[in-house]
Length: 188
Ligand SMILES: [Zn+2]
Image (cartoon, rainbow, N blue to C red; front, top):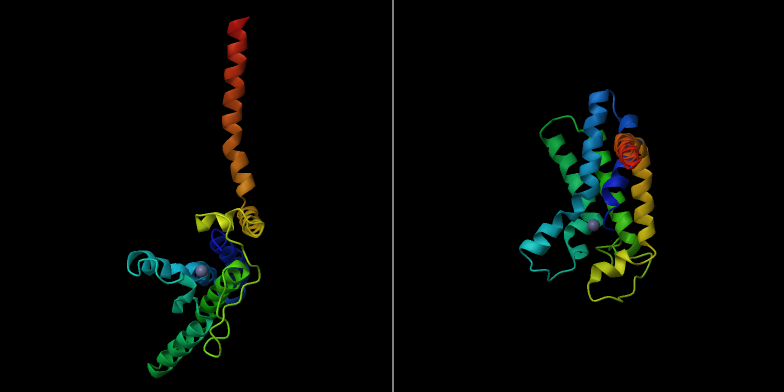
């Protein structure tokens, strides 16, 4: 998945954070954690491009292996317990939900090793055929990309994007009408 991770993260954060938070400030912090988590696995793209020389499929890195995040979360909880500090359960829950949402969305066309370490096979719901030289077009011009556009539109609607664009467009339209009217006056 390319463009829908952050919008999907917003849709999840918007529903999850207020339910787990005690205060508005905590809800905002949890929303930020969820948004960050929804794109966090793709941090491996930095390594993929800058260090690995694009040799490994980025879904093969540990950042796209579900069990890694479960172990990391368990280790974080253990560290909090050892340090005798309160475990921030809402933050850990939101972080894991955001990350797993990312991995579920990557399963649509990308392939994720859900059963690792019991099996290294990657699961993908839809097989996208390679029809173009540039791999990105195989995905962008495939019908499954409509799912990404739907998620993007859904999140855009929830943040009030149509109203914002309408407000932005109104003065522009008014200025255009004024200009056309004055041009017509001058012509007469
Ligand atoms: Zn990813």
